[in-house]
Amino acid sequence: MPNSITSNPIVLTGSLPSYKTALAAAVPNAGKNNASYGTLQTLTILKIRWTNPGISQTLSIGDPISGTILELLKSDTTGEDVVEDFTANPVLWQDFSVDVWNGGSLLIWTR
Image (cartoon, rainbow, N blue to C red; front, side, top):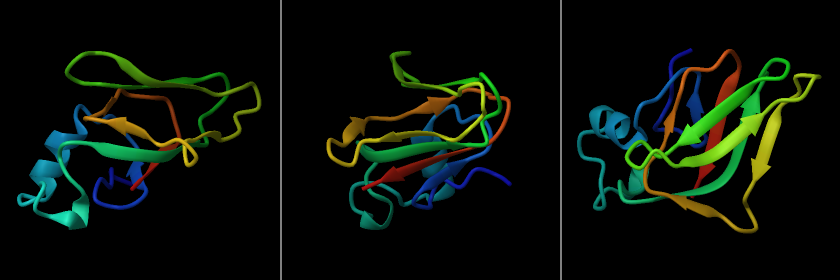
């Protein structure tokens, strides 16, 4: 299954060098005047779920410009889904990238 960047949640099954770049390519008129896909300025992150991550795996979500790690997800020895819920205190990302990982899907809910 390929990455689905125009859905909510955003569904990633492979690496993504830049969300903004991928969205601009997928939706040529995406931007601050197209409310259908939010803006290219910021993303309000409500929840992240890494499904079927495998045992003792790590997944890094970073800022492609600064190199800052935005989230570091680690699965435990049972391989259960990893969930970060920011609904009470959403976080803002300017852009994000995800490196290659060993398995599962990454779901990112936005507002």
